[in-house]
Image (cartoon, rainbow, N blue to C red; front, top):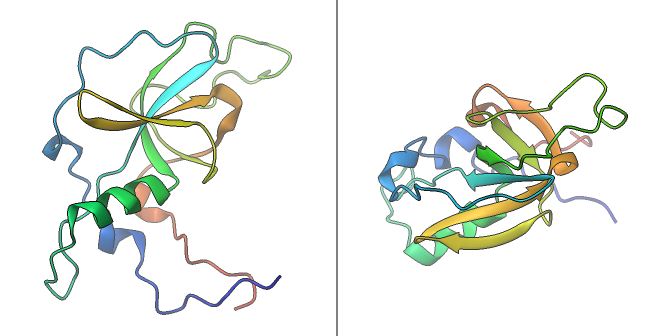
Length: 140
């Protein structure tokens, strides 16, 4: 199956707000067991570039469909396996990471949407989530 061309799709910096503080703070965080990493998906802008207000349901859907989030905390056993992670941890608290679209367990804690991932489900780490372009297509 060929991926559709998304050349007119909006880029991350047009829909990511970068204002995670807008949403309530889930502190204190729950205790994360074992090899898990707790990630908070990036927050989404409330209106489009053209000024159209996005409904809360659309913002929520976009936040869960994104594959970028901020690491909130790690379980005590995350990245401890020297055979699996010979170069050490792939990420730490405060890093922005990318993960698979269907990876992890999605949940709400104190009204904040979170994703619980295994340590090896982190695909990459980025300095700023706006640098990731989900519209990239190799056929272009």
